[in-house]
Image 1 (spheres, rainbow, N blue to C red):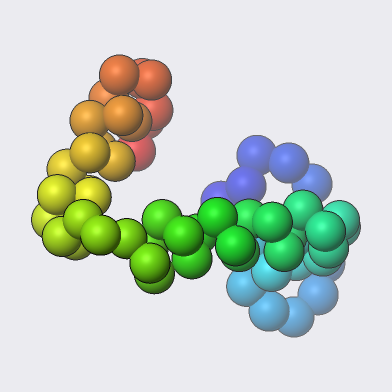
Image 2 (spheres, rainbow, N blue to C red):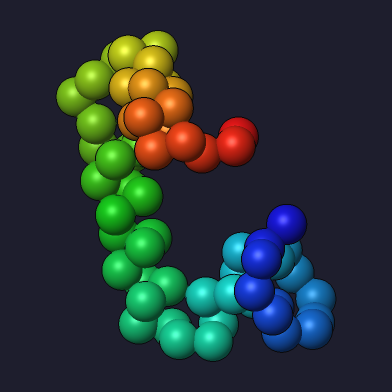
Length: 61
């Protein structure tokens, strides 16, 4: 659940958030594709790195 005001409407929360500023949404989609779609790392290695980074940054999830 987002900690910011999300526009009302249909569709997933993530889509509605990025509809506020579509250029940012496109940039985030490109970054996501680079990290998750075009990665040379095995999925398990990538997720282990993601989890470690989250722990270092004190992310709650």
